[in-house]
Length: 157
Image (cartoon, rainbow, N blue to C red; front, side, top):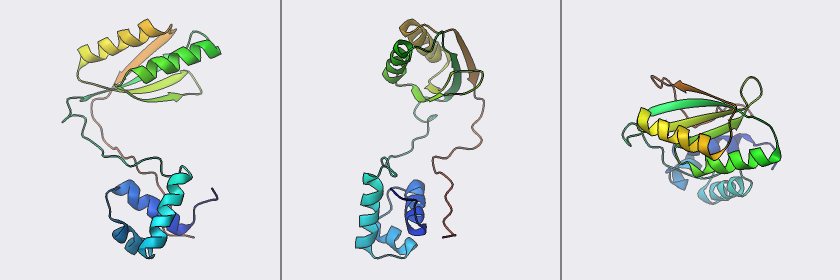
């Protein structure tokens, strides 16, 4: 897909803020009628710009109030290890995000756990599943800012 034009960026921004908005409201916000707006949304979805529409839940109210950022140092960088690691992190639902990093750590995980005991269970499950050279855990004390909406320029062409 080509670079997004201003209308596409406005549509994406509106949906990132509230994916439940009716097409009529989105169309009104971006200056289109409903049918062209819906066609643009479909095009953004088929191009993979809009990956899915979800509801955001409060982890504390779900009983998952402990956020842990876990740095992983791999013992080697073989295809076999990467495959086993990928399967292990996919199989553990409390692991919310996984990034391969440049720098001191090889992978960074964001984990949502009920409490320290729950995290320890996850830690043991991960380290039993795949060899790891080093694990460093950082426990979040407070979430100061959280968003899933990427900053898009919705003013300039």
